[in-house]
Image 1 (tube, rainbow, N blue to C red):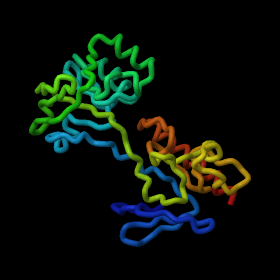
Image 2: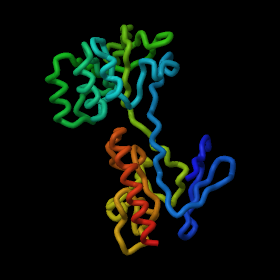
Image 3: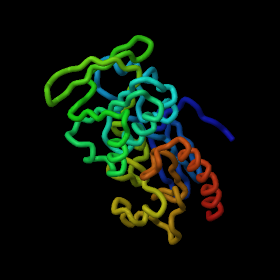
Image 4: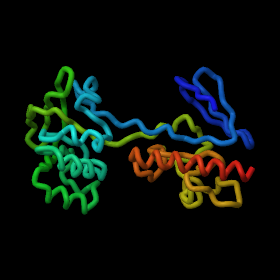
Length: 255
């Protein structure tokens, strides 16, 4: 086995039975099979003072690992989709109070009903609609936030040591080119969806069905957050990675 480190992947090509990955230095590696596990880039809050505090009180797409650290504190969560709702309920088990900041006028526009109901029934969760973070402050760790209420056009400076943002993510799949089919957001389509999704059309070239985690290109697999409809959890990504090893061997046995 060989590990290639500190290299930026910029392209992918299919050359008959060979799949080639191209690097930024114009070198490339050819293989019979490829596993795409390039993950996602989380969208960042565009507010002064927050960028330098990422990982020091400001977190994106995280909560399970940091929730216990928030015990007894006030925590702010930005977002209104299911991922934000699930994070709020998890953090509320440890935090003194969880304040959910939502830009829209209702929580149920992008969140499942069961989550909305559970949040409403959780005593230490407060939902602020028409609200967003416009600034952060702190030296070594987050110390406070400025919250804008769009209804009253007023700003509120609050003390805060923890901010979790769930405002979407962009899959790192631009390098795949046109060969590997993705959905409109860029997530890689895999498994049975390759035959069902309109984006794939009749791209699948074989008589057998795609293996689970296999993309529109036979022998190219995807695992983790980069894959359409994946669980977006570390444990799930690890499981898919392990499953991919088995599927790679199954594929190699067919060629």
